[in-house]
Amino acid sequence: MTARHGHRGEKMENAEKKRVFSGVQPSGNLTIGNYLGAIKNFKSFEEQYKTFYCVVDLHAITVRQVPAELRRRTYETLALYMASGLDETKNTLFVQSHVHEHAELGWILDCYTMFGELSRMTQFKDKSAKHAENINAGLFTYPALMAADILLYGTDIVPVGIDQKQHLELARDVAMRFNQIYSDTFTVPEGYISESTMKIMSLAEPTAKMSKSDTNQNAVVYILDSKDDIMRKFKRAVTDSGSEVRYSEDKPGVSNLMTIYRAFTGKELADIEREFDGVGYGEFKLAVGEACADGLAPVRERYNQLIADKAHLEAVMKAGAEEASYYARRMMSKVRRKIGFVG
Ligand code: AQP
Image (tube, rainbow, N blue to C red; front, side, top):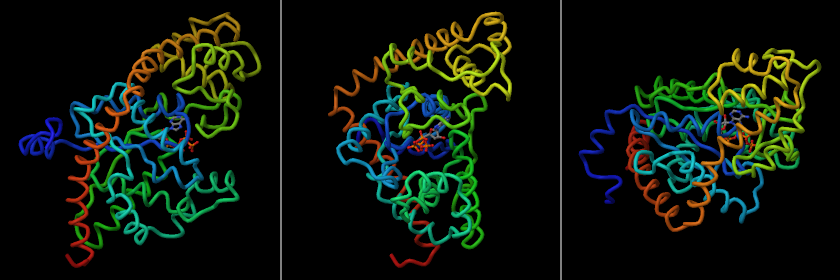
Protein backbone atom coordinates (compact mmCIF):
# COMPACT_ATOMS: atom_id res chain seq x y z
CA MET A 1 0.00 0.00 0.00
CA THR A 2 1.45 3.38 -0.92
CA ALA A 3 1.74 6.34 1.39
CA ARG A 4 -0.55 8.23 -0.96
CA HIS A 5 -3.48 5.97 -0.48
CA GLY A 6 -2.72 5.40 3.13
CA HIS A 7 -4.28 2.98 5.49
CA ARG A 8 -7.66 1.96 6.71
CA GLY A 9 -8.06 5.13 8.75
CA GLU A 10 -7.86 7.21 5.63
CA LYS A 11 -10.36 5.00 3.83
CA MET A 12 -12.72 5.32 6.79
CA GLU A 13 -12.44 9.08 6.56
CA ASN A 14 -13.06 8.93 2.79
CA ALA A 15 -16.06 6.70 3.36
CA GLU A 16 -17.78 9.61 5.08
CA LYS A 17 -17.04 12.13 2.39
CA LYS A 18 -19.41 12.75 -0.48
CA ARG A 19 -18.09 11.60 -3.83
CA VAL A 20 -17.33 13.48 -7.03
CA PHE A 21 -16.64 11.86 -10.40
CA SER A 22 -15.89 13.37 -13.78
CA GLY A 23 -13.94 12.54 -16.91
CA VAL A 24 -12.58 13.92 -20.15
CA GLN A 25 -12.02 11.95 -23.34
CA PRO A 26 -8.48 11.87 -24.72
CA SER A 27 -10.01 12.33 -28.16
CA GLY A 28 -8.15 15.47 -29.21
CA ASN A 29 -6.21 18.41 -27.86
CA LEU A 30 -8.17 19.81 -24.96
CA THR A 31 -9.88 23.16 -25.46
CA ILE A 32 -10.69 26.10 -23.25
CA GLY A 33 -14.25 24.67 -23.36
CA ASN A 34 -13.05 21.50 -21.61
CA TYR A 35 -10.97 23.65 -19.25
CA LEU A 36 -13.53 26.29 -18.27
CA GLY A 37 -16.60 24.03 -18.48
CA ALA A 38 -15.12 21.10 -16.57
CA ILE A 39 -11.47 20.73 -15.49
CA LYS A 40 -11.06 24.14 -13.85
CA ASN A 41 -14.00 23.35 -11.57
CA PHE A 42 -12.64 19.99 -10.46
CA LYS A 43 -10.21 21.47 -7.96
CA SER A 44 -12.90 23.15 -5.88
CA PHE A 45 -14.03 19.72 -4.65
CA GLU A 46 -10.69 18.26 -3.63
CA GLU A 47 -10.77 19.24 0.04
CA GLN A 48 -14.35 18.45 1.00
CA TYR A 49 -15.10 15.49 -1.26
CA LYS A 50 -13.61 12.17 -2.25
CA THR A 51 -12.87 12.92 -5.91
CA PHE A 52 -12.35 10.60 -8.88
CA TYR A 53 -11.13 12.22 -12.10
CA CYS A 54 -10.75 9.89 -14.99
CA VAL A 55 -9.28 9.97 -18.50
CA VAL A 56 -12.10 8.20 -20.32
CA ASP A 57 -10.28 6.30 -23.04
CA LEU A 58 -13.04 3.69 -23.43
CA HIS A 59 -15.36 6.50 -24.47
CA ALA A 60 -12.80 7.93 -26.88
CA ILE A 61 -12.80 4.82 -29.09
CA THR A 62 -16.46 5.32 -29.98
CA VAL A 63 -14.85 7.54 -32.63
CA ARG A 64 -11.92 6.03 -34.54
CA GLN A 65 -8.60 7.05 -32.95
CA VAL A 66 -5.04 6.71 -34.20
CA PRO A 67 -3.46 4.39 -31.57
CA ALA A 68 -0.24 6.39 -31.08
CA GLU A 69 -2.26 9.60 -30.70
CA LEU A 70 -4.69 8.04 -28.24
CA ARG A 71 -1.76 6.84 -26.13
CA ARG A 72 -0.07 10.25 -26.23
CA ARG A 73 -3.28 12.10 -25.43
CA THR A 74 -4.01 9.86 -22.47
CA TYR A 75 -0.76 11.01 -20.86
CA GLU A 76 -1.45 14.59 -21.94
CA THR A 77 -4.93 14.64 -20.44
CA LEU A 78 -3.65 13.34 -17.13
CA ALA A 79 -0.84 15.92 -17.18
CA LEU A 80 -3.40 18.64 -17.92
CA TYR A 81 -5.51 17.59 -14.94
CA MET A 82 -2.44 17.99 -12.77
CA ALA A 83 -1.28 21.19 -14.50
CA SER A 84 -4.74 22.65 -13.83
CA GLY A 85 -4.04 22.29 -10.15
CA LEU A 86 -5.30 18.82 -9.27
CA ASP A 87 -3.07 17.41 -6.58
CA GLU A 88 -2.58 13.67 -7.05
CA THR A 89 -2.40 13.15 -3.32
CA LYS A 90 -5.86 14.67 -2.85
CA ASN A 91 -7.64 13.40 -5.97
CA THR A 92 -7.85 9.94 -7.48
CA LEU A 93 -6.54 10.47 -11.02
CA PHE A 94 -6.73 7.46 -13.30
CA VAL A 95 -7.38 6.00 -16.72
CA GLN A 96 -10.77 4.40 -17.32
CA SER A 97 -9.53 1.27 -19.11
CA HIS A 98 -7.21 0.49 -16.16
CA VAL A 99 -10.24 -0.20 -13.98
CA HIS A 100 -12.05 -3.09 -15.67
CA GLU A 101 -15.21 -2.63 -13.65
CA HIS A 102 -16.16 0.33 -15.88
CA ALA A 103 -16.60 -1.99 -18.87
CA GLU A 104 -18.25 -4.66 -16.72
CA LEU A 105 -20.82 -2.35 -15.18
CA GLY A 106 -21.23 -0.66 -18.57
CA TRP A 107 -22.42 -3.95 -20.05
CA ILE A 108 -24.75 -4.58 -17.14
CA LEU A 109 -26.28 -1.11 -17.41
CA ASP A 110 -26.77 -1.62 -21.15
CA CYS A 111 -29.35 -4.16 -20.04
CA TYR A 112 -31.16 -1.57 -17.92
CA THR A 113 -31.08 1.24 -20.47
CA MET A 114 -33.79 1.39 -23.08
CA PHE A 115 -33.29 1.61 -26.82
CA GLY A 116 -35.77 4.50 -26.92
CA GLU A 117 -33.84 6.42 -24.26
CA LEU A 118 -30.56 6.06 -26.12
CA SER A 119 -32.22 7.01 -29.40
CA ARG A 120 -33.16 10.37 -27.94
CA MET A 121 -29.60 11.37 -27.03
CA THR A 122 -28.63 14.46 -28.99
CA GLN A 123 -24.91 13.67 -28.78
CA PHE A 124 -25.56 10.36 -30.55
CA LYS A 125 -27.51 12.14 -33.25
CA ASP A 126 -24.77 14.78 -33.67
CA LYS A 127 -21.89 12.33 -33.63
CA SER A 128 -23.55 9.83 -35.94
CA ALA A 129 -24.16 12.65 -38.43
CA LYS A 130 -20.49 13.66 -38.10
CA HIS A 131 -19.14 10.09 -38.37
CA ALA A 132 -21.62 8.56 -40.80
CA GLU A 133 -19.04 5.95 -41.85
CA ASN A 134 -18.69 4.60 -38.30
CA ILE A 135 -22.00 4.61 -36.42
CA ASN A 136 -20.96 1.81 -34.09
CA ALA A 137 -22.89 0.28 -31.20
CA GLY A 138 -20.49 1.90 -28.69
CA LEU A 139 -21.43 5.34 -29.93
CA PHE A 140 -25.05 4.44 -29.28
CA THR A 141 -24.55 2.93 -25.81
CA TYR A 142 -22.02 5.60 -24.73
CA PRO A 143 -24.44 7.02 -22.10
CA ALA A 144 -24.81 3.62 -20.39
CA LEU A 145 -21.02 3.43 -20.01
CA MET A 146 -21.04 6.98 -18.69
CA ALA A 147 -23.73 5.97 -16.19
CA ALA A 148 -21.46 3.09 -15.14
CA ASP A 149 -18.48 5.46 -14.66
CA ILE A 150 -20.53 7.61 -12.35
CA LEU A 151 -22.53 4.97 -10.46
CA LEU A 152 -19.51 2.75 -9.82
CA TYR A 153 -18.19 5.20 -7.23
CA GLY A 154 -21.43 6.02 -5.44
CA THR A 155 -21.01 9.49 -6.92
CA ASP A 156 -22.99 12.37 -5.45
CA ILE A 157 -21.81 15.15 -7.76
CA VAL A 158 -20.68 15.22 -11.40
CA PRO A 159 -19.10 18.49 -12.59
CA VAL A 160 -19.66 18.77 -16.37
CA GLY A 161 -20.51 21.21 -19.13
CA ILE A 162 -24.15 21.61 -20.16
CA ASP A 163 -23.69 19.31 -23.19
CA GLN A 164 -23.51 16.36 -20.78
CA LYS A 165 -26.75 17.21 -18.95
CA GLN A 166 -28.87 14.81 -20.99
CA HIS A 167 -26.44 11.93 -20.36
CA LEU A 168 -26.40 12.75 -16.69
CA GLU A 169 -30.18 12.66 -16.51
CA LEU A 170 -30.10 9.25 -18.13
CA ALA A 171 -27.58 8.08 -15.52
CA ARG A 172 -30.00 9.22 -12.82
CA ASP A 173 -32.89 7.38 -14.47
CA VAL A 174 -30.86 4.18 -14.79
CA ALA A 175 -29.77 4.41 -11.14
CA MET A 176 -33.36 4.87 -9.98
CA ARG A 177 -34.57 2.04 -12.21
CA PHE A 178 -31.96 -0.35 -10.87
CA ASN A 179 -32.65 0.71 -7.27
CA GLN A 180 -36.34 0.16 -7.77
CA ILE A 181 -35.86 -3.35 -9.10
CA TYR A 182 -33.21 -4.50 -6.61
CA SER A 183 -33.47 -2.12 -3.62
CA ASP A 184 -31.09 0.72 -2.88
CA THR A 185 -27.79 0.14 -4.67
CA PHE A 186 -26.64 3.26 -6.49
CA THR A 187 -26.46 6.84 -5.30
CA VAL A 188 -28.54 9.02 -7.62
CA PRO A 189 -26.02 11.65 -8.79
CA GLU A 190 -26.51 15.39 -9.21
CA GLY A 191 -24.85 17.42 -11.93
CA TYR A 192 -22.72 20.43 -11.09
CA ILE A 193 -22.92 22.73 -14.05
CA SER A 194 -21.18 26.06 -13.65
CA GLU A 195 -23.62 28.55 -15.08
CA SER A 196 -21.01 31.04 -16.19
CA THR A 197 -18.93 28.60 -18.25
CA MET A 198 -21.31 25.77 -19.07
CA LYS A 199 -20.98 26.17 -22.84
CA ILE A 200 -18.05 27.89 -24.48
CA MET A 201 -18.86 28.43 -28.13
CA SER A 202 -16.79 28.11 -31.28
CA LEU A 203 -14.89 31.28 -32.25
CA ALA A 204 -15.81 30.77 -35.90
CA GLU A 205 -19.44 29.80 -35.40
CA PRO A 206 -20.61 31.15 -32.06
CA THR A 207 -23.92 29.30 -32.15
CA ALA A 208 -22.06 25.93 -32.05
CA LYS A 209 -20.16 24.45 -29.10
CA MET A 210 -16.38 24.70 -29.09
CA SER A 211 -15.22 21.09 -29.58
CA LYS A 212 -11.81 19.47 -29.52
CA SER A 213 -12.65 17.47 -32.63
CA ASP A 214 -13.55 20.55 -34.69
CA THR A 215 -11.52 20.45 -37.90
CA ASN A 216 -11.36 24.25 -38.09
CA GLN A 217 -8.34 25.06 -35.91
CA ASN A 218 -9.28 28.75 -35.82
CA ALA A 219 -12.60 27.97 -34.17
CA VAL A 220 -10.97 26.39 -31.15
CA VAL A 221 -8.53 27.64 -28.53
CA TYR A 222 -6.51 24.77 -27.10
CA ILE A 223 -5.27 24.91 -23.53
CA LEU A 224 -1.71 24.43 -24.77
CA ASP A 225 -1.84 26.96 -27.63
CA SER A 226 1.02 29.47 -27.72
CA LYS A 227 0.24 33.09 -26.88
CA ASP A 228 0.71 34.00 -30.57
CA ASP A 229 -1.84 31.40 -31.64
CA ILE A 230 -4.27 32.49 -28.95
CA MET A 231 -3.99 36.15 -29.99
CA ARG A 232 -4.37 35.27 -33.68
CA LYS A 233 -7.48 33.17 -33.03
CA PHE A 234 -9.18 35.83 -30.93
CA LYS A 235 -8.33 38.51 -33.49
CA ARG A 236 -10.12 36.42 -36.12
CA ALA A 237 -13.06 35.51 -33.86
CA VAL A 238 -16.45 36.12 -35.43
CA THR A 239 -18.32 39.00 -33.80
CA ASP A 240 -21.78 40.38 -34.49
CA SER A 241 -23.26 43.33 -36.26
CA GLY A 242 -22.97 46.68 -34.49
CA SER A 243 -19.97 47.64 -32.43
CA GLU A 244 -21.14 47.51 -28.82
CA VAL A 245 -19.62 45.14 -26.31
CA ARG A 246 -22.88 43.95 -24.79
CA TYR A 247 -24.03 40.58 -23.48
CA SER A 248 -27.24 39.53 -25.22
CA GLU A 249 -28.85 36.71 -27.13
CA ASP A 250 -28.69 38.54 -30.42
CA LYS A 251 -24.92 38.92 -30.00
CA PRO A 252 -23.69 35.31 -29.66
CA GLY A 253 -20.13 36.10 -30.80
CA VAL A 254 -19.55 39.01 -28.43
CA SER A 255 -21.39 37.25 -25.59
CA ASN A 256 -19.12 34.23 -25.96
CA LEU A 257 -16.03 36.42 -25.85
CA MET A 258 -17.40 38.17 -22.76
CA THR A 259 -17.98 34.77 -21.13
CA ILE A 260 -14.37 33.80 -21.80
CA TYR A 261 -13.09 37.18 -20.59
CA ARG A 262 -15.17 36.91 -17.42
CA ALA A 263 -13.90 33.38 -16.74
CA PHE A 264 -10.25 34.42 -16.99
CA THR A 265 -10.48 37.78 -15.20
CA GLY A 266 -13.23 37.17 -12.65
CA LYS A 267 -14.91 40.43 -13.70
CA GLU A 268 -18.69 40.83 -13.81
CA LEU A 269 -20.49 41.20 -17.15
CA ALA A 270 -21.75 44.69 -16.29
CA ASP A 271 -18.20 45.81 -15.47
CA ILE A 272 -16.93 44.35 -18.73
CA GLU A 273 -19.59 46.27 -20.64
CA ARG A 274 -18.46 49.44 -18.89
CA GLU A 275 -14.78 48.69 -19.44
CA PHE A 276 -15.26 48.43 -23.20
CA ASP A 277 -17.90 51.11 -23.57
CA GLY A 278 -17.19 53.04 -26.78
CA VAL A 279 -14.27 50.76 -27.65
CA GLY A 280 -14.39 48.80 -30.93
CA TYR A 281 -14.51 45.02 -31.21
CA GLY A 282 -10.86 44.92 -32.33
CA GLU A 283 -9.54 46.21 -29.03
CA PHE A 284 -11.95 44.06 -27.05
CA LYS A 285 -10.82 40.92 -28.85
CA LEU A 286 -7.17 41.72 -28.07
CA ALA A 287 -8.03 42.11 -24.38
CA VAL A 288 -9.84 38.73 -24.37
CA GLY A 289 -6.84 37.11 -26.05
CA GLU A 290 -4.45 38.63 -23.49
CA ALA A 291 -6.59 37.50 -20.54
CA CYS A 292 -6.90 33.99 -21.94
CA ALA A 293 -3.17 33.68 -22.71
CA ASP A 294 -2.25 35.04 -19.26
CA GLY A 295 -4.69 32.68 -17.56
CA LEU A 296 -3.36 29.66 -19.39
CA ALA A 297 0.35 30.50 -19.12
CA PRO A 298 0.86 28.90 -15.67
CA VAL A 299 -1.08 25.80 -16.76
CA ARG A 300 1.15 25.45 -19.82
CA GLU A 301 4.28 25.95 -17.75
CA ARG A 302 3.33 23.25 -15.23
CA TYR A 303 2.19 20.99 -18.04
CA ASN A 304 5.60 21.19 -19.77
CA GLN A 305 7.30 20.03 -16.58
CA LEU A 306 4.80 17.24 -15.97
CA ILE A 307 4.77 15.82 -19.50
CA ALA A 308 8.56 15.57 -19.46
CA ASP A 309 8.37 13.06 -16.60
CA LYS A 310 6.49 10.11 -18.03
CA ALA A 311 7.56 7.81 -15.20
CA HIS A 312 5.86 10.10 -12.69
CA LEU A 313 2.66 10.22 -14.79
CA GLU A 314 2.70 6.42 -14.95
CA ALA A 315 3.12 6.20 -11.19
CA VAL A 316 0.17 8.58 -10.72
CA MET A 317 -2.12 6.63 -13.07
CA LYS A 318 -1.12 3.32 -11.49
CA ALA A 319 -1.76 4.52 -7.95
CA GLY A 320 -5.01 6.14 -9.10
CA ALA A 321 -6.20 2.91 -10.72
CA GLU A 322 -5.43 0.94 -7.55
CA GLU A 323 -7.38 3.38 -5.46
CA ALA A 324 -10.32 3.53 -7.88
CA SER A 325 -10.38 -0.26 -8.17
CA TYR A 326 -10.86 -0.59 -4.44
CA TYR A 327 -14.13 1.36 -4.65
CA ALA A 328 -15.17 -0.15 -7.98
CA ARG A 329 -14.73 -3.73 -6.77
CA ARG A 330 -16.86 -3.10 -3.74
CA MET A 331 -19.68 -1.68 -5.84
CA MET A 332 -19.44 -4.50 -8.36
CA SER A 333 -19.71 -7.20 -5.74
CA LYS A 334 -22.87 -5.50 -4.47
CA VAL A 335 -24.29 -5.25 -8.01
CA ARG A 336 -23.46 -8.88 -8.83
CA ARG A 337 -25.13 -10.09 -5.66
CA LYS A 338 -28.27 -8.06 -6.29
CA ILE A 339 -28.61 -9.24 -9.88
CA GLY A 340 -28.17 -12.88 -8.92
CA PHE A 341 -24.75 -13.67 -10.38
CA VAL A 342 -23.02 -16.54 -8.64
CA GLY A 343 -19.80 -15.86 -6.69
N1 AQP B 1 -17.46 24.03 -25.25
C1 AQP B 1 -17.59 23.59 -24.02
N2 AQP B 1 -18.01 24.39 -23.03
C2 AQP B 1 -18.14 23.94 -21.75
N3 AQP B 1 -17.86 22.66 -21.39
C3 AQP B 1 -17.43 21.82 -22.36
N4 AQP B 1 -17.07 20.52 -22.34
C4 AQP B 1 -16.72 20.13 -23.58
N5 AQP B 1 -16.83 21.16 -24.42
C5 AQP B 1 -17.28 22.22 -23.70
C6 AQP B 1 -17.04 19.70 -21.14
O1 AQP B 1 -15.76 19.08 -21.07
C7 AQP B 1 -15.91 17.81 -20.44
C8 AQP B 1 -15.19 16.77 -21.20
O2 AQP B 1 -15.78 16.61 -22.47
P1 AQP B 1 -15.58 15.23 -23.21
O3 AQP B 1 -14.16 15.00 -23.46
O4 AQP B 1 -16.27 14.15 -22.48
O5 AQP B 1 -16.31 15.35 -24.57
P2 AQP B 1 -17.30 16.34 -25.19
O6 AQP B 1 -18.28 16.86 -24.22
O7 AQP B 1 -17.85 15.68 -26.40
O8 AQP B 1 -16.26 17.50 -25.54
P3 AQP B 1 -15.70 17.93 -26.91
O9 AQP B 1 -14.58 18.90 -26.68
O10 AQP B 1 -16.81 18.38 -27.78
O11 AQP B 1 -15.06 16.58 -27.48
P4 AQP B 1 -15.29 15.85 -28.83
O12 AQP B 1 -15.03 16.88 -29.89
O13 AQP B 1 -14.28 14.73 -28.83
O14 AQP B 1 -16.69 15.36 -28.84
C9 AQP B 1 -17.40 17.55 -20.30
O15 AQP B 1 -17.78 17.82 -18.97
C10 AQP B 1 -18.02 18.54 -21.24
O16 AQP B 1 -19.31 18.92 -20.82
